Amino acid sequence: MSSIKDVAKHAGVAISTVSKVLNGYPNVSEDTKKRVNDAIRELNYVPNTIAAALSSKQTGRFAILINLNTQTQAIDEINMQYLSGAMNKARELKLDVITIFYSMLQDKSLDEIIVYLKSQSIAGIIIYQMSKDDTVLKELIDSQEFKIVVVDSYIVNENTSSVWVDQARAQYDVAKKAIEGSDVHNILYIAGKENGFVTEERIKGIKQLAKDLKLDLRIEKGEFSELQARNITMQYGKDYDVIVCASDLMAIGAMNALTEMDVYHPVCGFDGITLMGYVGKQMHTVKQNFSHVSGEAVNELRELLSGGVGRNVVLDYELVRLKYEDIIC
Image 1: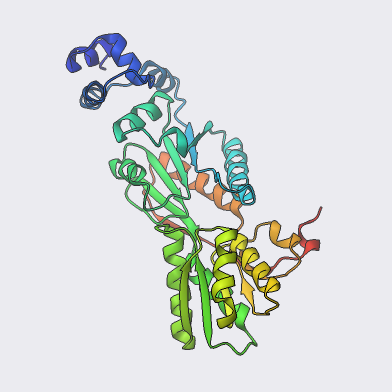
Image 2: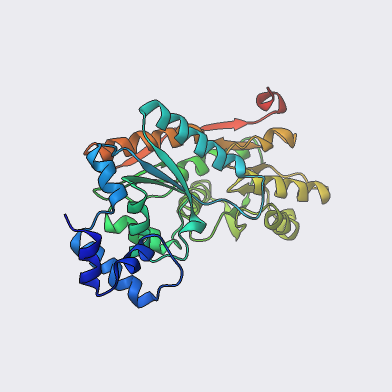
């Protein structure tokens, strides 16, 4: 097994420089970082912390990689359910877990991320809410250096599984439920975050519904923002028979805009967050059990760590109209 001294010699630097790169010190040039990281990979160097873990057979450590929303606290509930579901399942399976936030990795190169994760004795990763703009994470998955489960994204390879609900079908079903019994000729659809995996799938669902029912469809970008959904509804809401939103938060924004305009049109959301029960509108929504989804992601990661092959795992969802009585305890 290669040593840190071997890495330093191979890269043509001092041992202290290798240590700085491993520990993420900022005062190291990009060229030096690259030479050290290349040497680490070429020599298959394993830092002492990992070697100790491997020798004691502590190979069950994994990381939860999550992207906290910095614009609003209203949807923190989803992340908290993801975290609690993963933590509870990890405790049940006696797996060691740490939490890493996207912001901790955003300025790192692929090699730096790999070295950082290995220095933390990470064997597997669960990535939540990844978008198509997260190119370095996609490179990390493609490298297959770790066993990975992506939640709410469809990426599968030998070492990577996907865990999510059928987003297209769920969007189709909830929109169809919302317009049942109404005289509907057109739909205003407020989509989620651009370049999101779930956004792409949900747009497929609403397009299929519009095609099947021969309805005119207008799609606007809401970016999962209550404010943007409100503004879009203020601009276009009077001209459309139903407003379908790709999140509950946007549905609340749309409904409040319609109330201000003294216009009644059906509105539906997506996710089933608790906040929907407090707004008193009883809108149709797709209820995802985020804690359960996260627990299933941990189960899937354990299978990968035990020698399983990556696959697409599709979970159930429920169509509901949340009421205040449903969410109080």
